[in-house]
Length: 225
Image 1 (cartoon, helix red, strand yellow):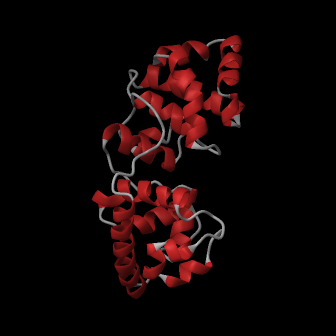
Image 2: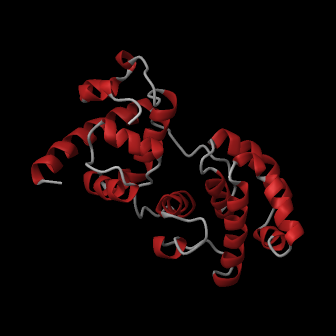
């Protein structure tokens, strides 16, 4: 990013962030969980699924599997693994998700004394974790802002409003970390997600009702990007 482009984008994202704060001042994660491990499970289940669907699954799942040890126990037998797969079937990609969640439970139990690590470096070594999942868990479970969570909503937002020259989530995250003050990283993501879900979907919509378009009019011509 050239110095001129950096300056221009910083000015733009400052205006966009203020507008998002007015639209969604109380935006928060919409997955339901009661502790750090339940958050890990919910976030892993949310891949290629909706938060609403995941919350339906975890409403029953968290009553059946109450502790980390229950997941470790399920992963110790073929019968337990098959049963867990059935319990999360509705989330999609259930075989791989079950494999990762149960493997993660075992590693966290045996190598981390049952505690969820508090660094990106430690988390990404656990099955099912990439930077996106790690950033969510660090921010929501530990209050650690190690990066910007970049999901499909954030990628689309960044491209619509010309905030990065890249489509790769890692490169986009790096640009956003440069454009935004660290204290805004967590809420910016939540507000962008709400914006994408409830106001600006990946299809044509009434942009005259979108206050962010006034900040960057070219975005009115971009939807699914």
